[in-house]
Image (cartoon, rainbow, N blue to C red; front, side, top):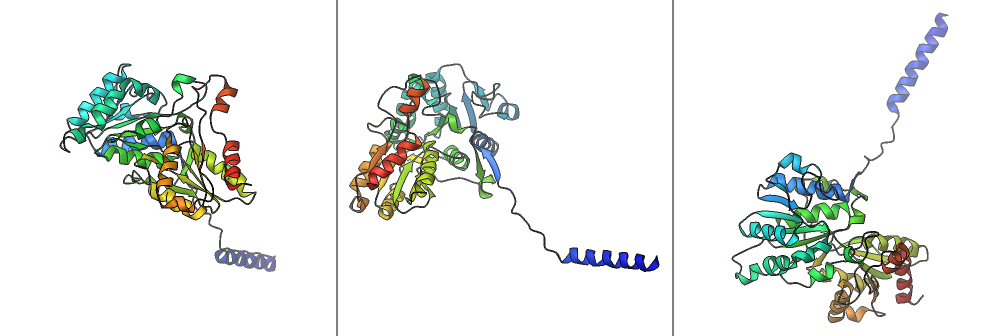
Length: 360
């Protein structure tokens, strides 16, 4: 009995010492995921906390937490003076916001959708965009106009327009179009801190999409400079340039094409105005082919501007084939789902355009 007890204790001691020597597999900590909606909310929360001049106004932004819940919790935290519900009058509350910016505050003016910004386009263009120039630099207008832009789902002709080219056409404005959560947070914080009027074009269909957030992007000091594009995927055969939701389409198309031996470089514009032509040119000089992808109409669009800038610059001599544009169809948006799907760029359209450009 004593011998068996000694044997048991010895084996236990050996097991413990072996356990001490064993190296456990340490997995890297799980990346933090955040939806685009929460990233926008966090950006506004941090800037409201950082600068008492910042306030948010728009339809249903306060007590209802925002039509798309982007401002959830902000009214309870900051109260009626900082988070302001307005009547349904874009011309009126956009004018109030522009006046407040001229008086030294930093308003965030939310349009429930950018389609409604047409009601206030005189305030955005004539009052906000031109005042700094017309005052010879004496009167800045630090304001952010933000809200969902472009086609959603089943909202037909009057609620599906992309305003990237509309506002990108106007000097005096900065126009930002984020794709993922990191873009949304970093660019919105930069827009709020900017002394110029910034049109911040979100996408309703991206609000609920979660993305991984880097450790750096979780800092309250994290910003992304306006006017700088980002290469989301390296490639050597063709450059895909896009913004907002269609960056996802380009990345999906790139995965399909890579199985056929075609490596796409995907450029996420992030900013429409000022346009980061240098990043596009550098990529085209590497791949010798260019396809632009956007959800807006083709005539005088973002893709058309990119084509012109590439043709006018040094990258033109590196092109081995004409630039191809993938855009929305040149019609008002239909209501029927099958017609809507055929009016917007799909992944298959990008794949076909790439093959056409490469002549494969």
